[in-house]
Image 1 (cartoon, rainbow, N blue to C red):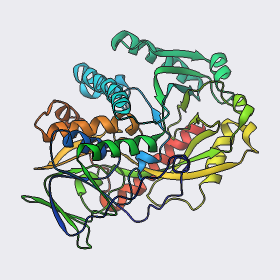
Image 2 (cartoon, rainbow, N blue to C red):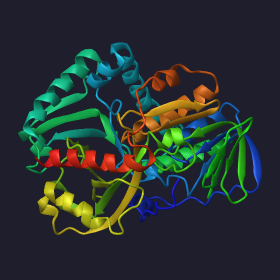
Image 3 (cartoon, rainbow, N blue to C red):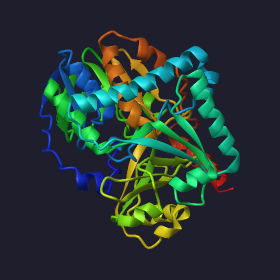
Length: 427
């Protein structure tokens, strides 16, 4: 992890009461499994392992939900990060179908965890995909038909420009679709709920432990460089984009990208001048815009990226510039909350799930799909530790090469590539 990531207080932190701080790990402790990172993946793995009676420690640099899990847009997208047509090309129809079924199972798992553990995360159904270029509209219609025909998923409804304009009050789009099986939620509330559930099952969560060194062995040894160490037979690396200097195999394949979000002041009746639906929206830009109504009548809007873990000092002007491109009618509205968060992306936008050494496993690089997949992949890691490898082995076949350029050149190469795609968004 990196000390450069020092985000501003988010809207989610303002509306969710902060739990009491967890203890720091002091001295040397022995566990069956040590997990780096208290986000969705690590907390779900801890919960499912603890329910099996495994001794588990979650080691978090800052606090529960401090990384991407507590700072994202809260959108629950259907499927994997890549579409099914791309997965069929990369993996073949059989594995593509298994990956689809896994993502649908992830929805069911999320619903079960929320219901079983009483997590109030304000879930609302509906997720609109908005096309910002005319030729994308036909692609969206064809993809909806493909999902209904080939994957028994009839829940994506195509929208022409007029129907989309009735829901999303902007001239920025030419059409799109609405996925009635997707939705949105409060991501920090979900992280807090998973942490409570994991602790109730017997897992231990330690905050203030920055993993600086992993010494592989029998047992493995995780050190913070300040005298604390966790010894464990198995280590799960669940940090997504916030990992530095601990595990090169992950760091070479998962690049940190900082995304920016702002929330308006309460809009009252003006919210209907922006959205006439409670569904969330994301668009077809490569550097995507995403937004949704909040339970208290605000608009949450995400837009703009930087390619490091160092966040701008003032995020609000960055987001406002993108917000007013879509909704010029909100030019005069105050932004009461603005913050950034770091997610992990891979070269192929597929998650990196591997056993990178005997007894050292990882799931990272969700590339923006972690709200749905994180809890599920945590369960899959727990299953793998217990010897159930079917889901893990499927994910381990996903092609995720290292970024080109090595440690020194991978960032400038990524910045150049992302700048190119951002330029294409504007053309």
